[in-house]
Image (cartoon, rainbow, N blue to C red; front, side, top):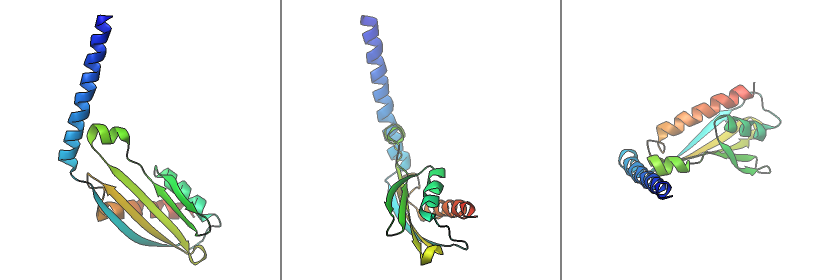
Length: 143
């Protein structure tokens, strides 16, 4: 019984030290979170009747989830979430949201990106990269 209690105590102590070390390393290496908002536009050659669902599927293929849907306003937001394990062990933070609004009867999509995170997540370069991936996947899905 005493051996089991010692093992549990050692395990818990080790987990706590790893947690503290990870947060410290993440804070030192990753730095303070930064944010960026980008604004983009996609011209659609062949509009799709169910564009909101296509955008939702593209978001899922990127690892995001639908975080907001406004059918009357023809807009959808897809988002990532920071993992608790990443935040606690490594100190990483990355929240990414892409908001797409369908305009001109589906011939144009206004895209807003909102990024917050450390390890260079909240930058214009990262926003451009995420938008490029989103645009490529969306246009491929609409063919």
